[in-house]
Length: 264
Image 1 (cartoon, rainbow, N blue to C red):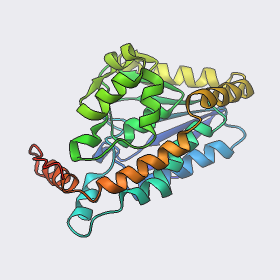
Image 2: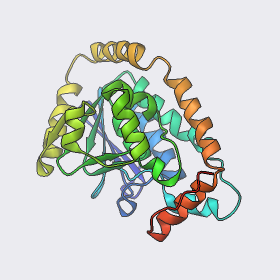
Image 3: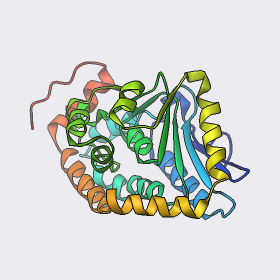
Image 4: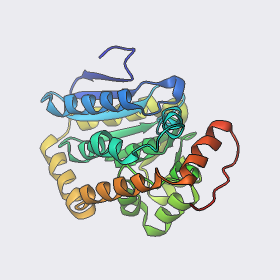
């Protein structure tokens, strides 16, 4: 991987640092980005010298979610199959984060929206900068949440807050996310890199097999049906991609105006 790649991976002293590296788009997800993240996670999982992993974003944000420029090109022609990208690429990424037998930290340095929010919340431990926020923006363009977040948010914060985040599509500031139990720590913006780095180093020097079994046990009690939920999300997203509301939502976003949904 090079510094120009959409996702980069660095390994040092048992710690892997994965950087989402499309800062000009606030690290939006497209096919190349998704492939790079999948490959980086696989490399970290397979490297026996890696004992802990951190995911963070380059530039001003963690990840703004799906690249809506790519979505716009789809709605201008035939209805896009939104379920295919989830099944083939994004869902395996989320499963990898949950199933890698090593702790995975999210260092959230700014906006975490859409699938970017799903990725952050799928991690084992989440440290956020004070200026960060979490946003399930899907409903704002006529979609449903995906990336496993319909399983993860209820497990972390409960059904009431999951419904609020999913249906209202409003920003949840880092301090509020901490209060809700969505994340683990909030630190000053200029302290995030140091605080997250210290946590990563601690985990990389810790009892790796114990961490793996802790993660397996938590998965068993909290996410035993995650694969089925990811598939249900993909099926629902496939339906939503064929609606008039999705077309209107994407066009309105591109035009920087409020969407006028018809309910169809």
